[in-house]
Image (cartoon, rainbow, N blue to C red; front, side, top):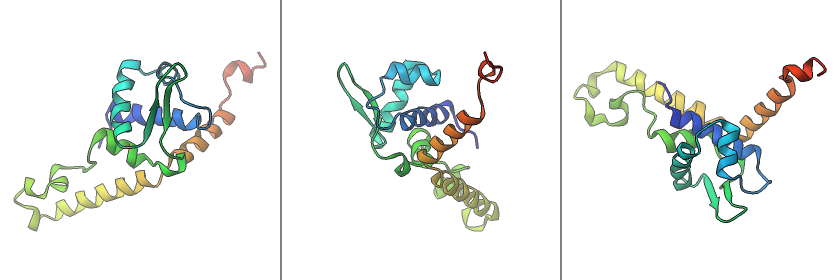
Length: 150
């Protein structure tokens, strides 16, 4: 299974919002700039995230986007599913009527198990965990100029 740019960029945008929790709304242009995503494309990603209740928008001069819940209440599955749709690895897992062989197909069971593992994995990672991972990465990966004393 391969995530599209929608899923990958959406998770990055949500991480950026989580990193800014408590600092007020993040303007779209700042969010796009920080994550190196086109503002126009990012705006299209925020629509389903808002529809899923994961993001709130604030209008006005100091407006922008915020998480709709605490980072520890939003997991990667919530984000990816709202952007990618169902995460079934094959069509017959998502829609049993897709294939006539479901009843006797052992491989169908394997694909179902695989889908469940993916959902369990993504559900187990919250934005809070990603924030901690990002902070650790920032602590251990100093820019080359800082490491050289410049």
